[in-house]
Length: 254
Image (tube, rainbow, N blue to C red; front, side, top):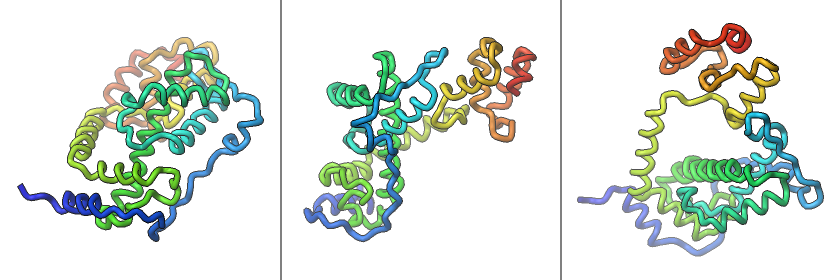
């Protein structure tokens, strides 16, 4: 079976890697702004991260922590880890201990922090491929060095990441992921705050009535569009939920 042009290009890229450290000319993207929080952490007191009565992190403290996790992950984690479960436990423990120096958390918070870190790493890898690598797939010389915004990525690590991104194994895994996402017809619209933010908002709006909110209600609210409607896939289920929802709570929410 003959090799595709892309396979041959990758082989050429891999065989002719140069060792110079000069960045080739390419548009520089706006570098993500690091929070002031990162610059004054050595002197400030720990940021308190609250847990609401629903057992989830919320409030400004969690927002600061989530932002910090994003920056920390981009700046320190190896981009070759393509599965968070494969990241060595000692690496995870070091990250957790670092965060504990800056944020007031309980051991029960570790699971959510690690989960958030895994999502950030996955999103960062996707961004590197989508915003940089695949945009230059017809000119692989542009990919000899990491983007100017991320000079901290070791050159060898970056080049291996580029090569893996064009391998048949990655393409197969990517296609499998796309098919799985298509099967999920009921994606929520809650953004970065997730259900934690939704539950906190409901608590403020409903007061004592929030106790009447069940999982069906939150599922429905999480998929409600800005115009008050629902996607066709959700509409049928939404109608069933609304038909059995307590009128007082339904009136307050919908």
